[in-house]
Structures are given as structure tokens and as C-alpha cells.
Amino acid sequence: MPVNLAASSLKKPIAIFYEQQSWFVPLFNQLDARNANWLKVDARNHNYDPSAQAEYSLLFNRMSPSAWQRGNGHAIFYTVNYLKHLEEKGVRVVNGSRAFAHEISKAMQLTNLDSLGLDYPKARVVNQPSQVMDAAEAIGYPLVVKPNIGGSGAGIERFDSPAQLKQAVDENRLSFGMDQTALVQECFTPRDGIITRVEVLGGKYLYAIKIRTTGKTYNLCPGDICQSTAGEELERRPGCPVDAVKNGLSVEAYEPPREVINAVESIVRLAGVEVGGVEYVTDDVSGRLLYYDVNALSNFVADPERVIRFNPYARLADYLISEADANEQKRPAQTHLTGVAR
Image 1 (spheres, rainbow, N blue to C red):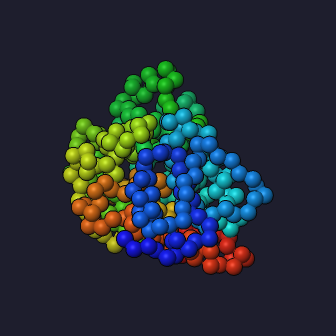
Image 2 (tube, rainbow, N blue to C red):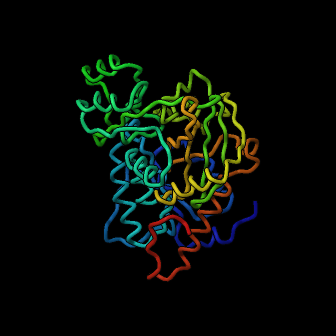
Image 3 (cartoon, helix red, strand yellow):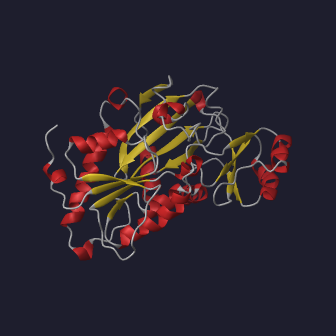
């Protein structure tokens, strides 16, 4: 690949701010291939001076809400403050403080879906285990209980009956997560075992894939699909849409209806998510189209050239470089940016 002159001429580096150490190698490779001025910033061990001026032309936030599963939960709320600091200092932040606040609150995600008039698995948000049984009665069985701050399916548990749920409440084994808030949410059954994942770049539709799930991996009560968050290797997440290809699930490129694309773009616009994924299903029982996961830490599908006929990491690298270059060209008075890409 020829050298990208804009990439090599950036006065300040592009920063990739991340906690999980193996998920973003394809992006790193694409930035290197473009001779980009970039660096890694490890969220697990970080500090900043509130009075310091901007060090970066752009920061791409890749902090994971499932960091608490890997002993790095301390970086989650730290990241909220750090992103706001950077935005105040005029750094162009991709997936900034508004997007990250949305990423670490499943409750906020549902509120946003509701405000847009989009259907989602019905739920109750609770902050005490003693509230769970009443919430479950309103939802019906089967259902799941999941922490508000989860990530990759962390802490989700399915219950098929009041007796099962009451036992979990009595044994105090429900996971309410870092903010002691949980969702009691209905299960659903994907029609024909199919879920659809839609990816956006710059807040706009990039591609979509259909994943035909197996009954064993996806008994989908799930709002969330990934089965493991602690492993460093992606192969250890057998249900994740990102890894569906390498785990033997049937994956194919798909062009969603225009109304779905419009809905997804509205979702990410409201959330401030510039790079991310939205997943939806058609519930086999009710026939409802349900949006059930909005993910600002979305990784692109494995083996993308075969599945979707292009490399989305290449487009992501070009997007970051373009945004960084545009931010450096702005006058200081114009540099406060907190929303999604224009």
C-alpha cells in the first residue's frame, strides 16, 4: 500500500485508547500500512494532568465495558472522565463520552430505543435483588437477569420459572454488576435461528451480516450473545457475531431493508456512536422485529474479505486519519467536538 501523506504528516499522533490487548490488531496493522502517526494508549494504567493541552490529533476510544471481567473495572469510570477532559481540550474523540456513557448502561440503551419508537425485548430496571420477583411477574418467563454494565454477555443468567429465579434471589447469586443496577428482560427466539448485525462507520451504514445460530450456543434469551469475556483470544468467544465465521456458524453478507438502516443510523446518532454495531432479530413467537444490542465496542466480522467482499479495518483506518487531519486543520476556537461525525 502506498504511503498516505495525510497520515504521515499529522503533527500530533492518533491515539488508540484500549484495555483488551488482542482485539484490535487488524486496525493496528492497517494504520501501520498507511505509515500513520499513531500510538497505543493503555487504559489499564493511565493518568492525565487536567491542565495539560491536547497531546493527540484524535483519540479513538476502544475501552471495553467488560473490563471488570478481566480485573480492569477501575478503568471504566476513569474513562468517562478522561474522555470529557479530552473533548474539553479540543481533541477529536471518536466514540467519545456520550457514546461511552451509552455503552456502559443497558438501561440507557433501552430508554433511547424507546424514545425512537423502536421495539426491544421488554424489561424492568431494578437496583435491589428484592425487586426482581415483582419485575419478573411483569415480564413473564423465560427471562434473563443481566447487569447494567455488562459487555460481551457478562453476568447474564436465564430463568425459565419463578422457582428457579427465587432460588437465585435467595442464594444472593444474581449479578448486578459495578453500578448495582440490573435488567430483568424477556427472552426471545430468533426466527430460523437468525440474528442480524449491522455495522456503522462515521455513524453511517457500513455493512450487515446474517448469522444462523445453533440451538446450543444461542438459546437466545439473550439480549447479548458473546459467551466469554475473560480470554485474550477471540476464538474463546464461541457465540460472538464477530467470531461466528471461525467458529463454524453460517454467516453471510446481507442488505437490510432501508427502514432498518434508517433505524440503526438513528440509534447510533442518538447515542453518539460513530463506530459500532446494532443487532436485531425477528422473534419467532410474536413476529416482532426486536433491537436488542447496541455496541460501541464493535469489532468487525472475521474473514471480512470473504464474507462482505472488502476490509472494513482499512476503511476505519482511513476514517480515523481523515478525521485527525480535519481536526488539525481547524482553528483552536473550532475544536470542541463531542457528537458523532458530520
